[in-house]
Amino acid sequence: MNDIQFVINLGTIVSICAGLGSIVAAYKIIKAPVDKLNEKLKAYDVMLGNDKKRLDELQELLEKQQNINLTTTRALIQLLNHEVDGNGIEQAKKIRDELEKELLIISNK
Image 1: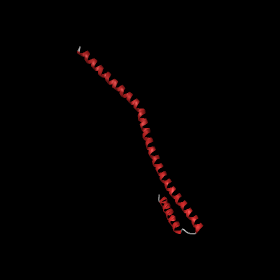
Image 2: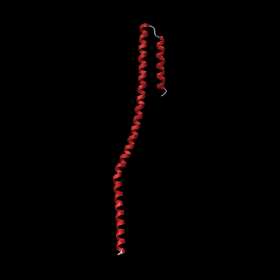
Image 3: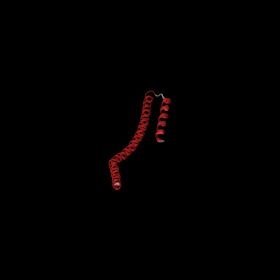
Image 4: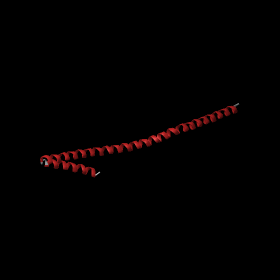
């Protein structure tokens, strides 16, 4: 009678182990698509970071270009004023210095 009890217990243990093996196999099958999605998400995060960096650089260049455009416009207005009244040499020098400064900042980058 003790031998039968041992066989049943051993059979139960084998069944439990087989059940656990099935659960682990099912977990791996279910987890594989999740892992692929996580890898894609990490790759998209890297791409998004690169895009943000490029957009920030472009925004900085745009702001510098706007400053140059403003200074150039002021220089043109000063030239027109000088042609009209023949004065304003100091203002022209000041605007020239500003334009040179802006151009040096851009050329050093």
